[in-house]
Image 1 (cartoon, rainbow, N blue to C red):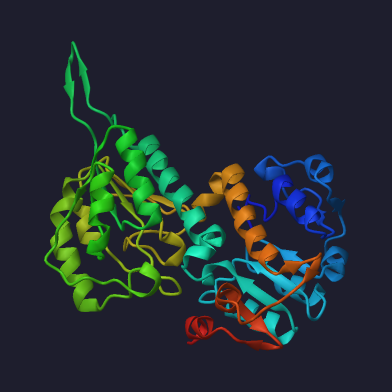
Image 2 (tube, one colour):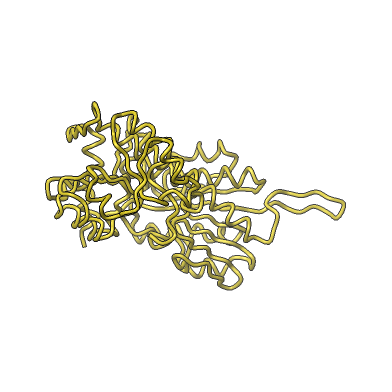
Length: 366
C-alpha cells in the first residue's frame, strides 16, 4: 500500500519462526523502509526472494500488514493461511475473495481482548505509537513552546492540550504531551478511564453524560443525540486548547464526529488539531484524510496510517504480535489449527470457503 513502511516480520521474529521448525521466505526489500535490510533477514535464517507471485504460491502461511490485493489472493494456494490486518468494514471485497479462494485468513483487529492474547494485540501496539507521534506532529506545527518558560524576557505560559478519547492512543498522547510540559485535559465516554488519565498528570473532563462503554473495553457506537450533546459540552474546552488530539474510534464503524466546523471556527488562529481517526472518516468534520489543511488559521492534520511513520518500532511490535499468534498454532514445525481455542476462534475471519467470524460479517454488512 502506498505509504506503508512497516513489515510483518523482523530478523528477531524470523529467528523465532525458524527455531520453531518453519522455513521462512522474505520478499526482497520488504523491510528496507523499516531499516531491516535483506542481509539481516538472511542472517536470521530466512531465504530472500524477488519473485512476488511465486513466493505467494509456494507459501503455506503468508504474513502481511495490509489487506491483500486481488492479485495476491489469486496467487495464494487454496488452504493457505494469512495473518494481517484485514479491516473487514472497509475491505469487504478482500475478505470475500479470501473466502472464495479457500484461504484461512486471520485479522489482527479481531484478536479477543483477553489476558492470554495481550501479546497478539496489534491494535494496541500500533495505537500507542500513533498517540505518541500525534503529539510530536502537533508540536512541530504549533508556533508555541509546549512547556512553561521563565526567562529575563518574561514568562511563557505552557501550551494547553486537549485529548479526546483516552484509549491506548489517547493515554500515550497524554503521557507524551505531559513529558513535553503541556497542560493536558482529556475526555472519554468511559468514566472508568478517569483514574488512568489522572495518574498521567492530566485533568479528566467530567461531562454530564451517560457512560458509553462497549464490548472488550472499547467505547460503543453513540447515538446522534448523545454526540450532539457531547459536542455542545466540549465546545468551550476545544476553544481553549492550543492543540486537540482526537483518537476516538469504534472498531468496524465510522469514527464519530467530535469536533464540528463551527467548533473549529471557535479556536484561536495558530491552533493545531491532529485527527488520528482520519482513516475511519475522522473525528473532526473538516478533516481531509491524508492531507494537512488550514481553516481560519487552524491547522488540521489528517495524516493516515500514523504508526507507519515510526516504521522501526511499529514493525518490531507488529511482527511480535503476528509471530505470537502464528506460533500459537505451530506444533513440531507443523500447523495445528484448533478452532476451539478462544484466541484462534476470535481472530479467524475466513475458513473453509466461508466468512466464519460473526463480528466480521456484521462489519461487512451494507
